[in-house]
Length: 66
Figure (spheres, helix red, strand yellow):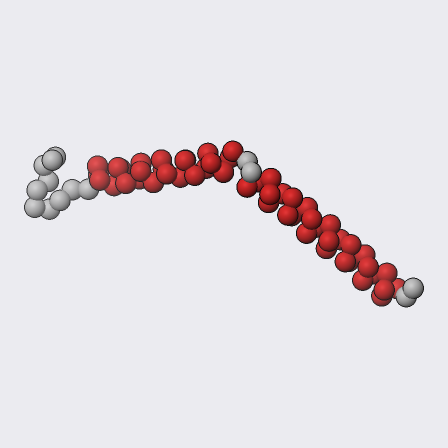
């Protein structure tokens, strides 16, 4: 076998190994409870930001608390 052929086979083997490892890692991440925890955290963060924005907003016509 020529040198180019050997290099091509080696590059192909590394690419296949990387694709397999990436797929396995993605599947494990999707099945993790951390995803559900992250979604819950993002929802709470969004609600908190909205509450802080509402709390700190002052209206020009009616600055008193309603």
